Length: 469
Image 1 (cartoon, helix red, strand yellow):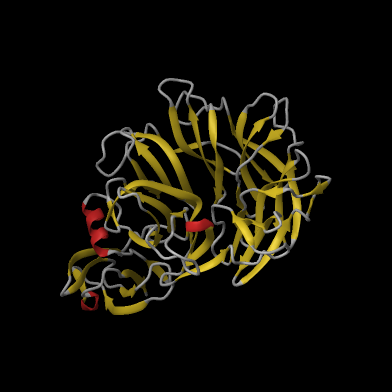
Image 2: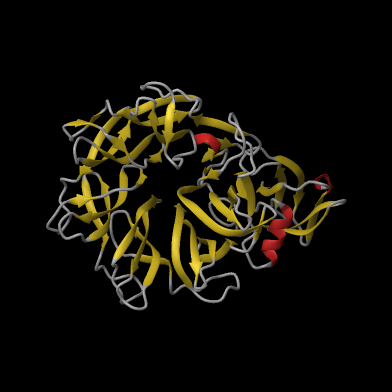
């Protein structure tokens, strides 16, 4: 079965964005600062960038009087997963603190937390089962002692990789798989080609048996992007490496990189030369030629004049890059690079959920299966977390869904272009993240064709896809 998905949701917003030259994208609100906290009291006061999958999105939220927790939206229902009322397994009492961001969203969801006794730990929620993967009673292999604390984990299937501290000044990179921690490398590992050792912090990218990370030399302070796979440390780019497409050389990098589809994606810049060059770059995980994906020499798409001036955050998944960047006037936006085509998804000043966007932020792990989660700030001071359906892993070349009209009393009329004499099913869902679709009609395409869905009369949200056969 071939999925030909072009999702249309929050109908008036989708039409407005399309008419302004933006990618036709469905946006679904997960929660905002007017949303009541499930299992808590009052409304959210702050929300962090979510991670999204096909069936759910997870985000960190805060409320009055120290309320913090992780919350899940499955397309219809917002539920509490973990908060300060949740007992910390392997420790004492309930959680007293939780890390700001969510990691992993499919079957397994990992996070960092602190229990009532002040013990730091790394935890996994698989379905409804909450377990401790490690805490300060867990031996950190190769460190001579126990873990002291854990940094941002990256999940791939049933395994995860992360940086963690051990006793004293010890810091290392570890793989957790099948219930066991394995040391990959640490701050006693020599910096390739340098006088000192690796020094690192923040997060890393992880896929299969490989990790990608930023580090600097403990003596020369030379920085670089590296990969580690099959017990081999590979230099991908360092300060003084020539930036692809420029005569400039990298002067610094931003962590962490993302690893997906055998490619490492990272942000780097040359702020020594004038004019400065900044951008998002790609390199094979095993090393090789660097590719510039978007830089300060890239013209902003969507009818906006000028080039990008800076890059704030990005997410990448198997060939699709979503990034938040500013224009020369400082206006932020979210953009998509897929199959060689760069187009805007949403920009400051655009309407979203009936309000005006002023700021946008992405989670590096927030793009999965063509659905990306992001945080938006608004001109009225409120915030919200949203999911955007990009239409699957790649745009369909042989079928396009569009909006011909929407009338409150008459419903939605959809235009459709496909392959002549080919059978299609037009389906709809009331939610974006819930994998449940209802067939509206079956047809064999002969141009031109339009389909009216009268049952949308009075609705504000409905999502569509075309499936063949």
